[in-house]
Length: 287
Length: 294
Image 1 (tube, rainbow over the protein chains, first blue to last red):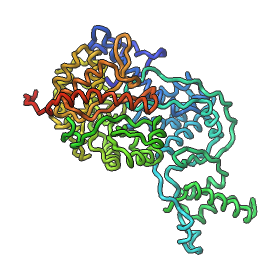
Image 2: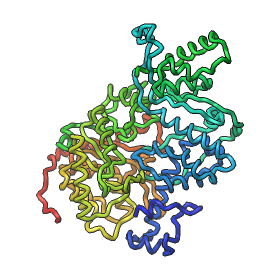
Image 3: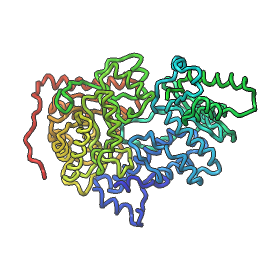
Image 4: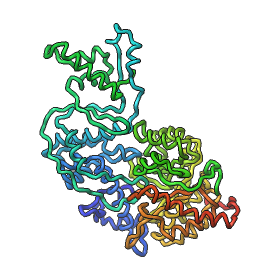
């Protein structure tokens, strides 16, 4: 039954007429399911086959507005179907469905050519949005916590970052692109418990202009339950990454700040501003 | 029956499903609602908005957990990570009972995210009952299993759906979440009498009921939860209430979700049938002696 349910549909969203061994699928279905006075065995199993694919494709469709804006509906569905054949859901929740999409895009680039690099960035970015939404948070590091640390030891202080905070180094400014796409799309809320999607929901894709290649550093974070994107300077990105990796404050600054490009005083003001902002946003935690 | 060991000896009335489009209305206007049913899997997360909303709801309302992915009928048994997260959530919500479906939907760690019908065999009943017991023993709360709507029947089945449901719940000694809309949908799709189904399930095990809307297609009915409850389902609900007593009842409305007030008003229509049942002063159902198929 599972092999019948999970087998990809035909181009017109029907159950495939031929089974994997060349037999008529109707003959295979007849060995599993009873017909009734209105439906053949094939038609009864086809209901489940269609519902499975409509449900998982609809879920990916919702989660990847940027990716489908680049590819268009037809190419996006082809990518999603191939992805789900190779990496079917391994989780009790549909939330995790796009978790390996970026990896798949890199492994099988033919579905995204000639925009594979852009699509790879978009899949990473859109997965980060899923992750940031409901990943755990920790008590924030406050100015009072800093006062507890003697000044002489502050350089050796180790700080953690909020577990939900996602740091991305991208080849394309996909944050702006996804925002533009989402502004063009009405939010449609997904049903929860009904097991009966009746068709693949497709909406008019956003027509945002594809972004040009440009190295971009972005933090995807949340505040008061809402997801936000924040551009980072490369040095700020490196400092945050070093802190997450367990570096002391001093080590993180050494790692992050390029040598001899600006005066010490210039960097001091900027770094101070970054840390003040990160603390206001609640990104820093005690380690 | 209103309070039994399968619903934690509670006496809940009419509830509705907690759904995202209603969050703002509920949190800002605090409407009077007897209880909310949540989809467990939507809140089995580590943080963020889902848990913040849940905590606000829990501060003001009674919540019961309903799952969609435990797959009691799965041959490979309950997923340990799923159980661990579920238990964490039950401690948060203090749900008096927990429900999920009498179905399968995962194979060797791959999930369909659907509620797939089971073959009605003794072997499947034994396996399913064993899974339910494992879940109940781990979670340490009463379990109620829900009959699903279905669109196919299997050659290998050895009994009717209601016989299978009875076989499972008696072997597991668990409760039933009786979904009268699902009974109607399956009855139409498979050509059985839904009243036969209601008459033959063990009424004393009914911990909760579900009502919902469905969609009629040319050759079958689909359980879409996107309409008001239709008259034949209300009639079934009235009959079920006479058989089982006044039971915690929940309206499911999961797609094309209208305003909170519209959903709540639809749910409260159940009061009419509850009043009829109360007026009839029907005694609480008792356990019937039955010989178990082996």
